[in-house]
Length: 187
Image (cartoon, rainbow, N blue to C red):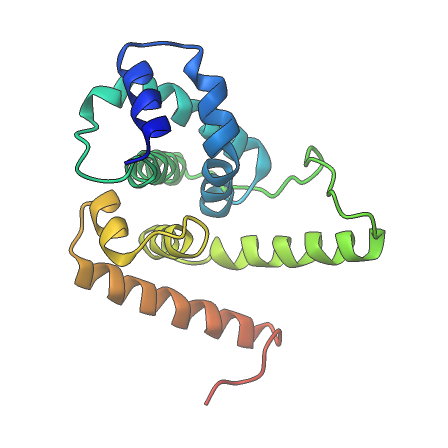
């Protein structure tokens, strides 16, 4: 484990609120990306990211050092996003896309920026059609860049389940892309 992570964990466990800005600087983009892909809109992703950071302070005592800090943080993030989705389903509300408050794209070419936003919106919409358990595994693998065993640890499921859910998620996503004529049929 990196010394910087050890220091961050120690400060979290002591309840040092000033560590939140460091967590945001180091992990904020990755936490946000996981939240955004799982819940499908910027406003909820921002709220979830802030809640995750606060939750890290509350739950830091549960980090036992057997895994990387990012693995543990991914688990906290994914579980919080899944709980949000379950609560939203119970309330029978739909997650609506709202990119009006999105941060400006750093790309200088407005056509490229527009194409990237459109691609992102399509991906968000299609990810939203995956089952939450499949979406979580796919997002943690592709955006969180976690290994199968790290995902298994983060979600508290067997590695074989991670592999099967990831395969199902990829197959379903490919089927959705084909049905929208965004890719040709796979052989």
